[in-house]
Length: 74
Image (cartoon, one colour):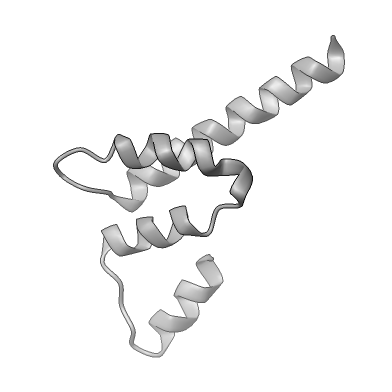
């Protein structure tokens, strides 16, 4: 996803922060559909920011890995 944005930006196509955040959300696999629903409901009146979405996705990724490690070890 980042490489696509980088290539588009290199030819002068720019996306505002909210569009980048929405592109990131839409690029997640189907297994993340519950997380996407949760994230989109948390957008608030200010809308999406790429930083906010990245933080939420990274946090969810950590949570998923921790849960998987727990299942493997118990």
